[in-house]
Length: 122
Length: 110
Image (cartoon, rainbow over all chains, first blue to last red; front, top):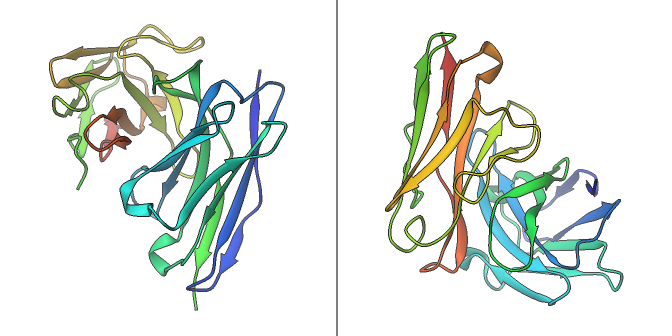
């Protein structure tokens, strides 16, 4: 059974960038949609973007266009999410999650990383 | 403001049934798969329903999902105190070209 392990918590200053990794163990990511979701304190879930590593084409939520990059390593076992020009409103827990079914289409995310807390403060 | 509308809260007594609704539009629920997630405070989401009405292995059959037109529902029967959590619906929105989640529903088991 695949597990997703994310990198550790980060504290950043406004205007800087953060890069979070999501590594799959026990399975492959290459043919599955892998998404990034965040949750600000006391708020709901917000989709940032997604990628199918084997296709190497990412989708991004419009509000993050231009400051979000999602890519994968050559082995397609680790996916990275980099968010730039951070503001205090980017303070949140960031999750990666894998779709339950291989291929394109969003069916439902059945494997989740443990979450990475990103705090943005001056 | 989410494009998917969920009631902020629902409640029911142990053993009873509760229905959580998720209202959308023709560009999201009307044409794409709905999924449902459970989240306890301080933990990540857990998939309860995928492809509108399918349960992953390990999810009991007292949880069920359905979809009709531009709305979806999650039913939980035989409520237990352990069901107290936040519940979210999620779906791809073809108009936005992105995934969207409902605002979440807090379930209280009285």
